Image 1 (cartoon, rainbow, N blue to C red):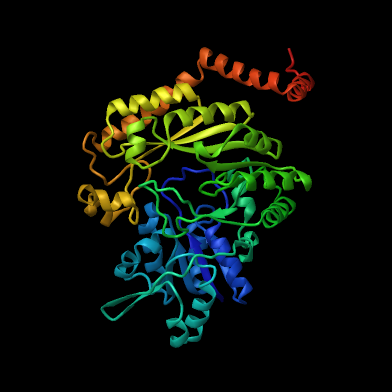
Image 2: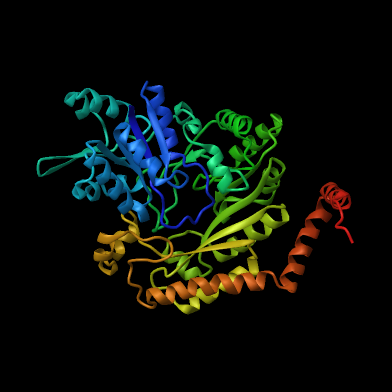
Length: 459
């Protein structure tokens, strides 16, 4: 029988590229280092029957879920409790709203904050029935009769290099690769974000910015490439390029070790410049995901994005000239947003020409400034039944209904994609890339050689 099962609960809509979940994998590594028998299940790639079987053979059942899926986690925890298992909830939502899980009656414990340092002592105390040791665990929440006991979350981990690499071997990596032909794998290089966007939860990783050492990052990349042969690595840091000197050092180390793997990152438009983008390209970067949110200066100010439309457009052009493909994230239905603001977003898209857009409907999450600001406009009865995703919101907008926002989202994507693939935008992008090759003749000669050597289709 396993000491503990850690489960990532399946979302009702899989919107992001499917790759191995890192949260429970980091915890699995910490538990294994502490000497426990641990099993991991990611419900996205394992069947419900496999999860039921894993629950049966475990003593403690831990669950993690993103905010839209916490109700499913509660249902699975009830299933586990009916079979006499000890149940625990962790993750971002548990860190900002532990009361939700305690009040559900489905969980014996909630663990808040980064769990790598606390989960080992917690499991040992529970399995040994050591109440004194359990009382020392930071970030724990539980019920004592009718009273809720919620202890302060542990301090953020300062030395990220001391955290063991995710226990990828405890999950079936080939299941992910079968579902994602790119063979995408995730890696964290930093934790935290210092920016003040009103819609972001910061409770789990904080508003500071903690970094791993360059050697530590590339060691993990080498291990990942050597064991699993991913097609691409996605650095899922909130802002990968915040410290530019560090990015140059990372790119230099990737090239020094001759690590031949393509990679992707998330960042902001004001955290890139052309020389750095070129260094990233030369080290294997082929895609960047940018959080733009809006093309309206006014809406960007409402969201406290601290970003201008001009900066967004400039970053998009630099990214294309560097040879890197750009995907951007947008939000519709932000507080006070009007149709005029959405038209500004469409205008910015045509100026910037990102390669792909993903649009979400504004959703004030528990633990964010927007939740506190807009609580009077949130349908809490809806939230009591199901949390909502990027496709809908419990926030009652002052200008649009939910149906209208869903239509606006759909039409924004459709109109942009039709325009993007039109002849004039294609021509403009071609000239922009040509400019890059003229500025970098050696790259232009290399690109021409690849084109001439490509096999030609049969006549």
